[in-house]
Image (cartoon, rainbow, N blue to C red; front, side, top):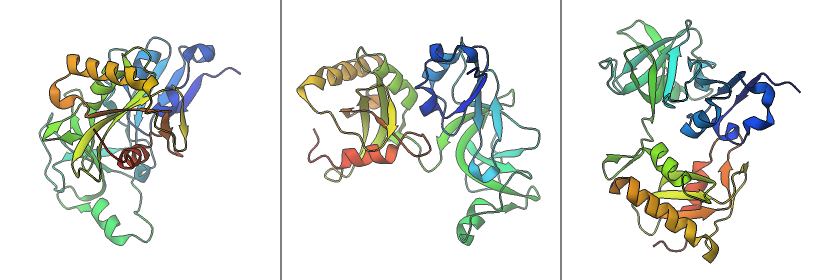
Length: 280
């Protein structure tokens, strides 16, 4: 089979070895559905033509694209809007545009914007408002971005799910890259989670024993044989990251779980942490 174009979520795409699809070399590898990670750029940057797409379901469905992401490119750069798309970067919850380079909420306009949510009139009114200042209806994505001087858009995350801890914004990609650089560590995902016995947010690093990611609930691997992985990850983080970015707990796990949409199932990871009888 000669595959020349491939469209996968980053979580699924990271499982694909370029050597297994030589026909895709110098072809087009399209990612979307979740944030692109640096390891995908490292893997495919010299092999194929990597496209980074962005588009919420409510806008059916492509809004921006960064074509031909360079190997030294920034994974959070989601590129430029399509010609049939209108966009605004507004102060969250307002109709006030932010200055170029400042952080604001991405709002989408144009014919691709959906009509709303079925039988959810209040949510529809909140998310699909008519902006008097601009004379059109938009979809408030809830995504925080900033506009670069070349017109491309830097994706920073969800406004209601910003990764902050003790007032400090965490660079999750950087933390995960440090941990993945440790010998024998195949995969990792970091999340902010709360244990019911502590009632405070903690940064948790889940260390994948196996590189494969699958759907379903994995098992934690809290055994003597995994202690060296925990120590290696902690030492690397303490040596290379500021203190506030060092995870509180490192939990070896059978594999990183995926949702039915092939995205990392962070909700399940948080539940695994909450189900622990005690924490260190």
